[in-house]
Image (cartoon, rainbow, N blue to C red):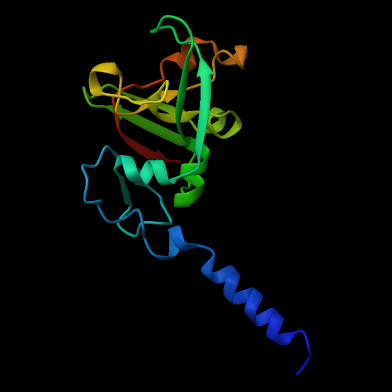
Length: 171
């Protein structure tokens, strides 16, 4: 047996175990705390096609801060949350369209391109404070409008859904 064979087997085992989010269906089981976001569609993480998130699950994902102004708020604020691209990648989502639905059933569909290219986040905090429903929470899709002037267009403003409750990923 070649001398590198045991090392190769160990590396292969490590690679196969490096997919905990997909392998153990971590997102497929509803959490104990209230679900604030459900994501459905073609998701490798979830055999039934739906992932469930409470605030703790979203907080456990890598967090990104975006300081920006918006058309609906005064002055700049710093928002934090998980990048949409990171969340979709972690779930093994396949699709080119996101349909976002708010608590009031406002719904809009948009392409994934901008969310994959720019640091678009699912903000759960504004200036360090958990966002309440009355303050556009618990989740607000935030684009970095101040940093990327090309995003200051109505087509992106329409997709900055606040009081977000669900996303559906499709082709």
